[in-house]
Amino acid sequence: MALPSINPTSTKAWKKLEAHFKTVKSLEMKHLFTQDTERANQMTINWDDFYVDYSKNRITSETMSLLLELAEEVKLKEAIQAQFSGEIINKTEGREVLHTALRAKATDTIIVDGKNVMPEVIAVKQKIETFSNQVITGQLKGYTNKPFTDVVNIGIGGSDLGPAMVVESLQYYKNHLTTHFVSNVDGDHVNEVLKTLNPETTLFVIVSKTFTTQETLSNANTIRTWFLKQAKQEDVAKHFVAVSTNIEKVKDFGIDENNIFPMWNWVGGRFSLWSAVGLTISLSVGYKHFDSLLEGANKMDTHFKTADLDQNIPVVLALLSVWYNNFFKAESEAVIPYTQYLTQFATYLQQGIMESNGKSVDRNGVPVNYQTGTLIWGEPGTNSQHAFFQLIHQGTKLIPADFIGFAQSLYGNHDHQDKLMSNYFAQTEALLNGKTKEDVEAELKSQNASAEKIKELTPFKVFEGNKPTNTIFIKKLTPESLGKLIAMYEHKIFVQGIVWNIYSYDQFGVELGKQLANKILKEFDNSSFANHDASTLNLLELYKKLR
Ligand code: F6P
Image (tube, rainbow, N blue to C red):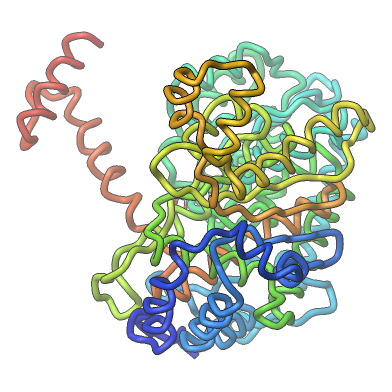
């Protein structure tokens, strides 16, 4: 079955939502809480070790019913079924979308082109496990017979962001290996990393689904040249491994066939950390933890596949995001984790969300007449409170935010954890309730401010409140809960793509800039530049003079 192709604005539910929006847009959430004492309980999904409270949103129970009606009308359930059963839902690239197979149970059967892919998936997982164990225990050694101390992941986009984010997030679970990530084609990036490394004890993991990506191949070549300053050609086999679908190109690079970890075309780059793209994760935290990450994601997959839509965490979060994006016309969303471990989480989500749903043509090939993908951004609390929270609290823009928090800290420092979490809870409460004129005046009065001063300062100190947040409250940051959290956002992306009637799994928008860069690169050595606009031409000439 192809994905249904329904313009959401043509549905009955959309029309009803437009009318309903007019009655809801100025409602104050704090009043909704006083009117309905059951609101918090009713608008919470308690699943496994996740407690997702979406009651601090500018919605009523009718809003949710209408959003769920919209999901039914755009045939979300059929789309979920189509994705999990391996239909070619990435139609523009002619591919299935089966990152969920990478974390499926060994006993599952997942058919691609008439063949069960699970035996291959399991075989690659076993290869990851064996290799990781051999490196971690020192059984595998470098060319001077020393155990490895460092691992460098060379990749970009989905071949970098996922592994980098997970390695950082699971730092607590890390072993003795030091991991590094080289992604940017900026030579200063690779040089900064290389200057800390000893070639005798460093393992390089080249990750590129296509093995044609300029950045990755340039970095891999530079690193190989650096390595060969000390080592011999035959030593490359001991220090370089690759993850790719393009086996021929990897062999051309000189990598031993045994050192190739295959992946599949039915795994999109930005959803690939569950495959051998996650090799650096497994090397860094051990295969057992890597497997728990996959198990967590599989649990979220089962939840997403089987829970009723109104109890389905990714579905509810996706529909709320549609509500703000398309009705309130919010432009961006913030993701604020209250743990320093998730420092790279928003950056990672940016690729998943913006590369997937940054589309303006629908599944019929027609320009959309509504907004699609949201901008996503964020930083851990409490740091972000001292950076951009001012704008969320008192700025002119509506910024729905996900607050992700964990009940338990990993080192068990209760004093810090209580301080951290008091901020976590306080911020969503402050965003909900704001601070009224009366409260500000009373506060200033209690500080003995003069009547004149009170009048002058009050407008600046009022918080209008009514700012929407979701509270995603999890017991503890573990490989398993992280797996669930990442998969939750993956499915949210999918649901939004279905509602917006766009293809979420291609990324043609990244091509044009790449093509032009290749053209310009060749022109640097020509005597003159051809066919550029006047502004670009000036800049190119200046660069040529100054470089
Ligand atoms: O940014 C575009 C993109 O194609 C991503 O989708 C992908 O994750 C990245 O480039 C890297 O591609 P590859 O793994 O083929 O090197």
